[in-house]
Image (cartoon, rainbow over all chains, first blue to last red; front, side, top):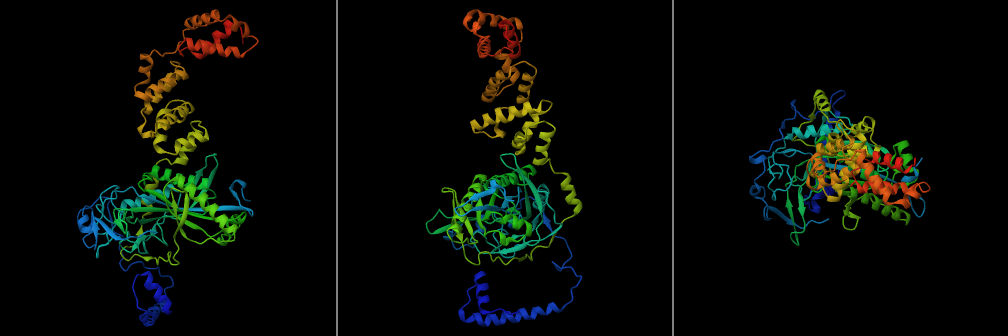
Length: 99
Length: 498
């Protein structure tokens, strides 16, 4: 499988990664190389083998329905907005986004 | 065959509407789906946000077991298949109120599969609507656009709150059916207690998919399963009332028919509903708006459920609205309409059952649906705020059944109870409203009226209507307290009519 320049442009845009025009073609080559390398896995016979969702054979850990304190709880708006370039009254302030 | 009532007339012929609803119902939980932050409404900006919900680096999601149980309960309430193996996927898109850059959702393997519910329309007709699936997902945060001219304010309190997305099959065929379906889903989740159904606070909202096709094409789709017989659909997002769902379907169907008949075409797009105008408008039409690049969330293992645990939940389900409705009709003798009204809301149903306990079901239903609901409606009150408690209304009905007061006097007592509360028996005693069954007293009243009105007495044999006038006069003279049956008999005897 190989990807072309236009696919790279589209994927980059969907991921919001700015890729200069002159990097699109080289990236298409690199990504195609990676995909082709991984495609070797198709040679393995997986007849009768269940699809594996994880490499560890344990159940999904769950939490009880109680509110927590600390990093996984609420009540810390100062920390929540601490990395934001602009805030007001504990709101994040961003350039206007209106549909 | 297309049913005529489902057809819309256009300038060039008849059209059919096809609707599918995606209902988002917030799980009534204490904490969020993957974090320990509170899931409550109305906190200050970013107060209910953990570092997981704000997508700080290194934070990992841990699934809330209670939310899983509520999704299973809801699935069972929708008569749907519970998938013992499901998993979570990432739905990738960028928006300021989605800090992770993806929403954790379920795509290929949802926790609940196909089901079916019954939906009653206002005219009593029952239609069956298929459920495609129910999956668990995170809610996004909230952007506020009117606090500053050039900026939006983002509050992540909703971010990560657990939602159940309930997807219908394209079985809904009119605006009425869409509204009734949405209402029925709300009734079911409220019965189950899995979602509070509060639309003002956004606990329940719907994305409404509408398309139109030429009359007859829907049946072709049903016969073949081929979607190409249906028209292109639009999706109107975040519709948050039953009335608006109806309006969206009506507006979209008309808009699409007009566009198609004037030679245009319908774009598959997302639209927004304007509450003020009742119209929809294009929201975004970027060609890759739906390119979400789903993939399994590597932070979460598959969700495996124990069949015995699911059975245990099934055994603990309350009586659901459809079962209740049937029991009201079959065991208590209610009309289909009253049974629908009473079973549509669990609180109303419980109230009615307390009133009806050990009494005549139909009489109880009349007093609850006509008198009480009428008075509540007029006063703008919900059943929860009823000034008359169910046991007191039951007692009032006993007073009628025991012949202590007439049905007419009962209405006066009811009005006093509604106004200022109190025990009906005491009100009857205090106000001297006890029915006069003493025939001597009634005879006295009747004799007086006959003596005072010789002209009417002379007419009564030729004009039977005059008899009613006598009944009215006598009843008035007794202050409404005369036993109507006794009064009738005495009047007939004295006036010599049958």
